[in-house]
Amino acid sequence: MFSLGLTGLLVRRDLIFVLMSLEVMLNAAGLAFVVAGSRWQQADGQIVFLFILAMAAAEVSVGLALVLQLYHQFKSLDVDAMSEMRG
Amino acid sequence: MEVAFYIAGAVAIIATGLMLRDWNVVHALLCLIVSLLAVAIVFYVIGAPFVAALEVIIYAGAIMVLFVFVVMLLNLGDSAVAMEKEWLTPRSWTGPAVLAGVLLCEVAYLVVRGTEAHIGMGMVTPKQVGMMLFGPYLIGVELASMLLLAGLVGAYHLGVRTTHIVEMRHARDTDTRRVTPSGGLVLAGTDRPPRTP
Image (tube, rainbow over all chains, first blue to last red; front, side, top):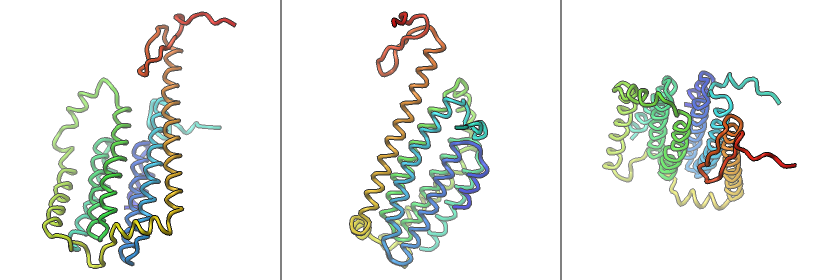
């Protein structure tokens, strides 16, 4: 699942799809943590999953706000259209 | 119970593949939600019911609602009605519907089966998680709260700047005054009173 998310991140050029692929990758990492915690009977895996969950929520909120603003600026969700961004 | 585990895992992977293959954002969101629900069932089967509930509530609930709202905000167009007629073909919803049906059968089976419905390694109860979370990991909880606060402030800041840019564009491009949704009056173009030094 992590490799699927990574593939999506590399293949798609749409910002929404990039964010969704990031979600899939975080979810796969959390799944690995919980499975490991269940294997060795520790609660640590689930706690790390909770932290991943909080981080994903914060990241998605900021990312979607950025997507909205970039859409208003560029009228497009193509990542390549924003490659002229310079400081 | 390993059958349920493998079925849910296969459903998750298939739904994620469907999500990547689909060119439509809303269809991809549907597949992603099915994938998250399948992962939640995997969590339940391997003996982590607390995390399974959190997965459904926060991922499939809150974060997906955010995605849906942003898609709605972006897709405002005249062709929306025609697009919707085009989207409601059976081909578009059979895949996620079949996968969700498989998941529903699995949930029903697990509920009928009862409490010992997890794979043999034993379960980690919510009580254990809570004791660990507010014991050795207390500093992590504080850091997560700081991160969430930063996310909140950042999202608010970006949203406010977006509306400000829209207002500036309106003031630059048109000559009429209008009332903003928040009740303020925007003076624009020639309608604006002359500036006094």
